Length: 166
Image (cartoon, rainbow, N blue to C red; front, side, top):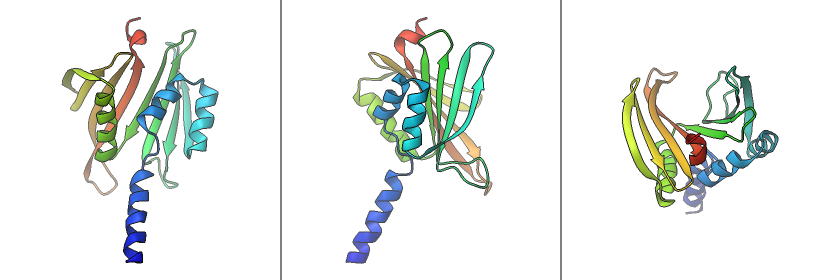
């Protein structure tokens, strides 16, 4: 009996830590300055991957959670983007489990987010949810893994509604 309980606890912990940011944390990170966001993600076990500056004034820092030491795969990716000379900040999280994706979507809906449109773009399913202060761009796509199997990947990008109106 103890072994069964230990095994079930182990399985639960794998599921909980497969991607360790709640939607509330994602929204909190969006409000942080880059340095504070970097500190927060590092404390949560995320690894900094890259930073990019674009000519149109957008800057993006990319992080990975449980990144493989052999290639660029990871359990999840997090993108922190901001625009120079503006308060506009956008965060995105890319996840690979249907369960975590459903947790995020259920939380968006629980907070009053309503789907305002959905469509297919470049072979991906895109849905846009809008709440009272935030909008969520949700994209479902497929990729081929190292075993040549097709797997779903989910990207959730979070915007402040006021940023979309600019």
